[in-house]
Length: 113
Image (tube, rainbow, N blue to C red; front, side):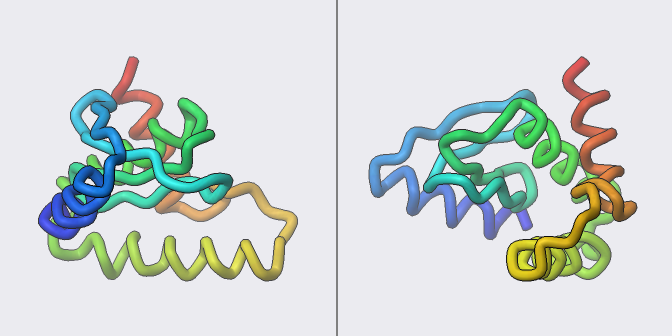
């Protein structure tokens, strides 16, 4: 995951986006009003992302350290599918209503304190 993140962020930096640091992770702000995506120790957020979103993406980085090779199957793919489902169907549920998203938010919030 971190290798994929490094490659993605590398290309964004080459295109002129600024590399920033959020606690133990590096990130780039790209686009508008879409949230964020975590790729190991790197993440990408929109330009308007909140502190909560950055902490949440940092939480996914910690999950990646804990879950290792299982991260894509237990968190990343389900999270991506759920993100797009929520964009299309707009269900009336909290974003953190599923265990892996709540866990990422909880870890992220605790990690930065």
